[in-house]
Amino acid sequence: MTLNAYFETGFELPFRLTDEFTKQYPHVTWDIKQDQFTNLINATPRLLSGDNPPDLIRLPTLVSFAKEGLLKNLDGYAEAFGWNSWPVPQLNQARVAVDGTRGSGSLYAMGLNYSLTGVYYNKELAARIGMTQPPKTLAEFENVLAKAKAAGLLPIMQWGSAKSGMGLAFPLQALMASIGPIEPINDWIFQKEGATIDTPSNLEAARHLEQWIRNGYFPPDINAIEYTDSNARFVKGEGVFTFNGDWENANYDKHMPGKIGFFLMPPATADKPPAAMSAPLTFGIAAQAKHADCAAFFLNWVATDPTARQINVSVGGSNPGGPADAAMPSVAKGSITSETLAAGAVINEAGTAMDFIANATSAIFAQGWTPELQKMVGGRQDAAGLLKAVQAEYLRELSRE
Image (tube, rainbow, N blue to C red; front, side):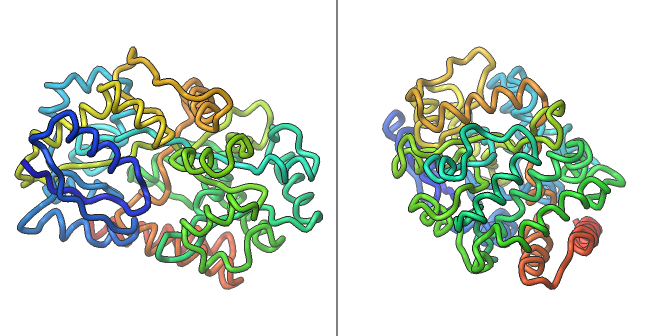
């Protein structure tokens, strides 16, 4: 049996998992294609509705595909494998109700793991500007950003090319959650009736980001920087901080072992719990997939097999999910993965996880956030205009979905 799969370029984890799966089940092999995330956004409808639909595919978004009947409803597999008894946050982001809102309803995807985002920092450079411990408030963080700039260092390395998708969406959403509540953000992502991204607290967050751009906290060529180049430059010592996710842990531990730290985006006030973008690495099965049962078995195996869970943590750097009582694989003491797993426990305890604003609709990242944030970098968009333009694009897309 050969499973037909589409993965996202630049991420080793799915390939390592499929290799291990074939090692344990030699009668299953894989025909894997890969592409950039933004290309997958455009190609997924065609792939799902084609003559040879994928048995397994990395999903940039899922609501429109579920509503159009292009994705397999996984409720039967959830019942058979016992997924419904797993912690609720693992599955609710992949549920779609009859009215098209996310967060409840039938299951249309599963995560290979459950990522966490935050702020990574170069310990050596941070020490040079007097940062001996992670900042506890937004004001403290902005103070060290200013110190980095004054010291002649690049405060934040980030990517921003249209091909990779604008990486300023990461610090923007982190600022939104630092300043305001997360519920309106998740409502907007889940397409709840009347939801808007253009809220007073989000406007304040966007104004902070606009000021960071004006202050020169990001590389001047950010609109041309690819995701992989941003990471390569960061591990070579360019940038004190970068906003990213735990899928880069293995890369950081490999190239700068013990020299990179991690902290959750600090809240605006010390009495407010931190929040973070934390979402499953989502994969789905085409409605007309030839080997749907095997693909579903693979998704269950990823979360329950001890070797697969160890690969997930060692290579993916993220929580492998699965049953609540499943043992957490071992991690090296002092590794960056040990820091992000500990931070994830803080977010779980506080209940302050968010999906990504880039995932709100199938095209909002490519048609809304990326071009509008690129305009802001070029001085042709301001904070208020950014939110109004993205909200208008969001409503335009919802009217078509």
